[in-house]
Length: 239
Ligand code: MN
Image 1 (cartoon, rainbow, N blue to C red):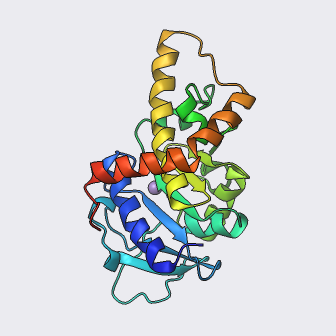
Image 2: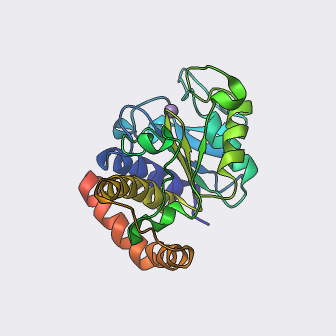
Image 3: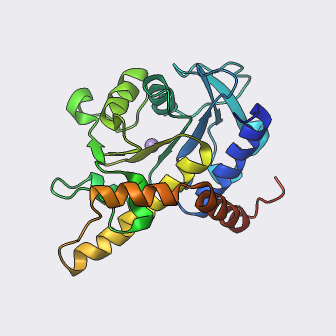
């Protein structure tokens, strides 16, 4: 298990990478479960990911309560993160974003987001869409309490990705790098699937192909290679 300092340094880098790759903009966030206490997680204060430094990181209980709030404002949608950590002991990092490429797939009834290319395999076999309106009526679509977060986590189930109707997506993974990989290629796959649909009926990866490709895509060799590339593009090698 990584030490806390390594983990927090990587969380800052991950914020910058997600911004550089267009997965997040002014909005969206990534968290990491504390390597020292599984009942807590770390995430920035409310700030655009491109601007985040080590000093912005805060520690939270799973219910979203800040350990040492000071005069900082936490993200309003932090409940997404704690709800997923609470339900999924295997998850150590969570990303929430509003990627433009993904939103159309959560806003249509008859199209499911599915891997059309090997690099899209991390999104998994069965990407579900959560609709806040089903249980909570006409809201502003944001996840602002644990009830809403837990309902979203239930839709995620054992998956790595769930779409949020009219809003964005959540991505859950076993560590920061793996989760960033899934979030980046979730966006890539959405773009490719939309292009494919414009040409004709897509030939999706089979279940076995998704499993085989996922193993290769998330191997240490592939993950380290991608991470080095993203760190370089984000210009954060010295953080
Ligand atoms: Mn949001």
